[in-house]
Amino acid sequence: MEGEVGFLGLGIMGKAMSMNLLRHGFKVTVWNRTLSRCDELVEHGASVAETPAAVVKKCKYTIAMLSDPSAALSVVFDKDGALEQICRGKGYIDMSTVDSDTSTKISEAITSKGGYFLEAPVSGSKKPAEDGQLVILAAGEKTLYEEALPAFDVLGKKSFFLGKVGNGAKMKLVVNMIMGSMMNAFSEGLILADKSGLSSQTLLDVLDLGGIANPMFKMKGPTMIQKNYSPAFPLKHQQKDMRLALALGDENSVSMPVAAASNEVFKKARSMGLGDLDFSAVFEAVKFPEGSS
Image (tube, rainbow, N blue to C red):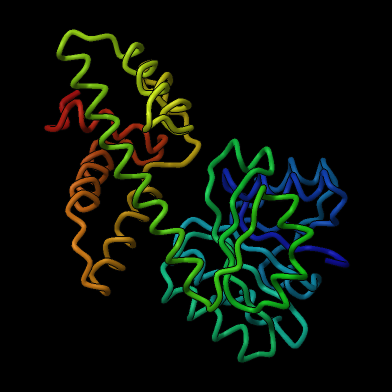
């Protein structure tokens, strides 16, 4: 990946990812809707552009990491958006978690102007982003995938190329749907143990020694018991992913009662004002289903 890399979106994930690129010697130009979020990256050697269009004009490759489909679309299509400066030879890599329709729409717009497009959503939250341990689920232009591998190797521990645009988005939604459903079952188990007079910590120890041991339970369990929901992956984004996964289920006539029930609990948690906390805060909505904590 020669030359400057553009980076659009400096939320929890984007900030950590662009910092990793800088740390590994990439030249990076950043943009964020709230420009003050760029300050810390500037201290580490990043340049700042005023608009997405300005980033694309300056850089051969631009990476976007945005919160949801509407943000991903607006950064491309709005006035001063990326599309204004896309031309032959420019690569646009969208690492946001969106539905395949959104990805396809962006892809068609980029390629119609001669650009190359890759969707590359990631599996992993704040700590894997900081540690360069994300799993990258890419689809679209194979050439761009190969050119982006030096950056992907810095950002992630493994990259998959999944074929045509839409497949990366779909794989990410399936993964996050399973994760959200598991978090609900885990919350119910913690509460059932507690209400039955059992130690939550002992439950965590038992789970960690069995066939359903996994890094999420190990990492989130202790913080959930302490009611510490500092956001690694905000709950409102998890609920958005459940909604998009259920829509994918509708399209494919797949019955998803567990995911549907989990989505309802995430919605309840949002209505309780927990949307900006970590997705593990769904624990509170399971504990107090009427929303009266």
